[in-house]
Amino acid sequence: MKLLMVEVRGLTKYYGEFRAIQGVSFTAQRGEILGLLGPNGAGKTTTMRIITGFMPATEGTATVDGFDVSAESHEVRRRIGYLPESPPLYHDMTVSSYLNFVGRIKGVGRSDLASALERVLEKCFLTEVASRIVSRLSKGYRQRVGLAQALIHNPPVLILDEPTIGLDPKQIIEIRGLIKELASERTVILSTHILPEVSQICGKVVIINEGRVVVEKNLNELAQGGSLEEVFLRHISKEVGEKEGNVSN
Amino acid sequence: MRNILTIAGKEIRSLFVSPIAYVVLTGFLLLGGWFFFNLLFRFNYLLTLYTGLQNSEGLQSLNLNEYVMAPLLHNLTIVLVIMIPIITMRAFAEEKRSGTYELLLTSPLTVTEIVLGKLLGAVAFIAVMILLTGIYPVILLFYGNPELGIVASGYLGLFLLGAVFVSVGLLTSSLTENQIVAAVTCFVVLLLLYVISWPVETAGAVLGGALKYLSVVDHFGEMVKGLIDTQDIVYFLSLIVLSLFLTYRSVEASRQS
Image (cartoon, rainbow over all chains, first blue to last red):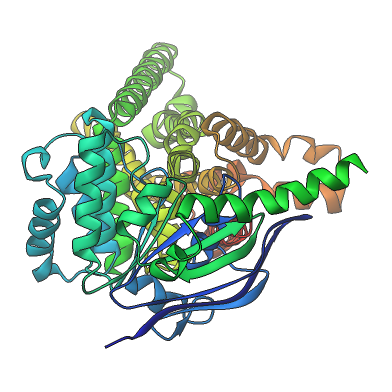
């Protein structure tokens, strides 16, 4: 059954005078992987930070599982697992003590903590490094610890900001496999600017350019308009072309 | 409450897994020991001198509380002015720099829990620092008879003063993502609270009175003398509450940008 899990309506965010996003709207269902696509600086991270409750929007609303992100922020934060662009790690902790700490601040009960820890260590292939210090881990492992951190409280919604950035091809394949597996009973919103990644794992694509949503479509609908690369470039370059035109005038 | 303890525990652990805790504890005890040795030496010297001179008035006025413990505690506050900024500088600045700030603020925690957790962690650490210097009055107990009530009152003062310093440190750390900036700002504020009463005599009754009231040393000095006045306790507590409130606002405001 389709169930609306994330609904974003008319989000606008100003940093001082600078407008990072304007009127961003989209929805995501349970069991869906939504790919937020866009060039660097398009507003993907800002959008994600608003949904996770890290910062408030200037205008517009977002709801997660029916809870408003600003008015019922606490409930929303319970239901979201968030992996920011650089994994939020305490470098002087061991992997398991770090995940234990995150589990506790995410509200995992004392009795469930051990089993939650074991589950995410196994899921993210971290069991053999559980007692290693985070600062000694390779980048790929750190990314996986970041993902484990987002999963520890078993949230129904996962927000992943460029989850495969900086990984080697084998790790990328592993992480993508993991994300697909996780999405079966969850909602995943991930941002990326790697186009093949979107066509491989996402069911739905939202393309953001210069702070606005230019495309919101299911991948199979999109395929009718040509390859994803073509669609992406058409929407991005149209606006860039307009702007360059203005400059030359 | 559980969240506050979780954060406090993490703070304490992060001090002890880095060399900071050990360097600070060693330095604090080393300097404390040096002060104690000197004060005790001077006390002995005066004792021998007055006995030799048969100065009974001088002998009457000599006592361990006034000649050893009081100056020792005053000296320790100076060391705290230097060391507490180093203990608290990482509290928020490091979280912001390393990106873990996003983790804390997107977890189902309230800002109050985060701030109080950090306060509790740092205060527990300085409590350990201060308790370890308890060895000095214990030594005095073996060889003399200092008045314990006065010693306890002085230690309570030192602890409250430490808690004030920690709160100021949390505030300056919450305002920046640069640890050095956090430490230096905290140091300047603490030193200012320390020397603010210097112009009391020349500043006139109203301003002078106000400056005297603001000075940490004046309030602390009363407690070292063994006088626990609600006015002094209220002074310390209001500084703590004010700093924590501003820290809270600063964390809330940092979400906006």
